[in-house]
Length: 195
Image (tube, rainbow, N blue to C red; front, side, top):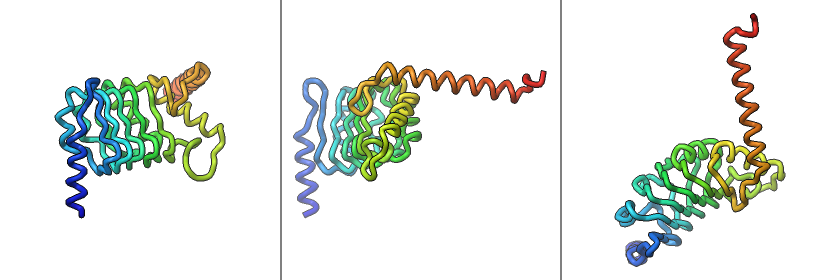
């Protein structure tokens, strides 16, 4: 039975090729890893939907430098997943995964996806407003948004909601306060305050 299921999955995968716009879907194939066959599209693929699988590693995407859209909803992605450098990635959806440590995940995204404009983390533990379990306050979700926007300053949309001018202003104000504190701390440490 296992061999028959794997054979059926391989046949479904072979029938999936990028369309004229270089979009490929390998969604709903119950994959635990990216199939080797997609590596032949690394130099041309612009959009990949790998949602509704069991994927937990993104390393196989390290040569997909033209990729602009990546949909990984309903997989097994965790916050410590190694994020390959995807310089052209603009749209990333990782809804309903296992991302629990927001700082770590955002740090990896900041380094690996410098062009990111659209991010959705809905139904991950790290996304408090939409997390499963006890309801959280709207304030928690607002704080989460500000934290994400402070780290990923290129974002225009977070969790399906456009980034507002007010949010940008609040992030800038926080950045200014942090700089002032850092400057004040450096001045105190250097002894300038004793003059």
